[in-house]
Image (cartoon, rainbow, N blue to C red):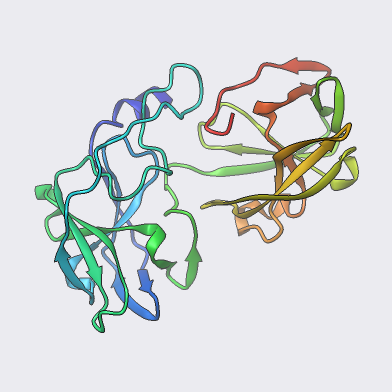
Length: 272
């Protein structure tokens, strides 16, 4: 299945949704639709929402072309193809169409859009997710729309796990919550704070996940040396991640992981 999903990355992909989708720009609701589409432009790994123009109340003005395409090999594993990861700005497009400026009726706020040229998507405009506040029905969503073919599962486990750095144990537990996400080829280990053996200081990194929520990062202090933003927690997680609320997870791709008494080979990830 993973190979099948990867094989369609070069194509424009879309999927209808039965959810009511709304987008707000500043104080103005500029889109309210029951016919939204999830859109993956070629080589994009996360979806955006496309809204029928008839459901957009803002002005749509032709805009200059965006920057050239920049692909990055940021996936999992050494053989990951170059992709458009979420850090590549919305202004970079790989589908045919016209860049737009989305401007509120009072001309006080504007953001980016993209009118698709694909005949199956005539009249649809992709909106720059990061520039708007979004709701599906009456629930706010963050980071990007959820992929209906992607999910997370959390399972408690008594398997002994330890996280180490240069022989120093940062954390060890036999009561972790294991988080499995989509086709990612690794498990994330969320550990009770009581099982962390080093000092954690507030970090400087802020991230958000469409499935888990907003993450709080921490810097670990190991023998007087700081490991910046090496761990995180979800203090107010979304519903699917309630089991990991307040627990600590480390970027194991930068550390040494021992599971069931055996060292685990590092997996290259976008966060390595």
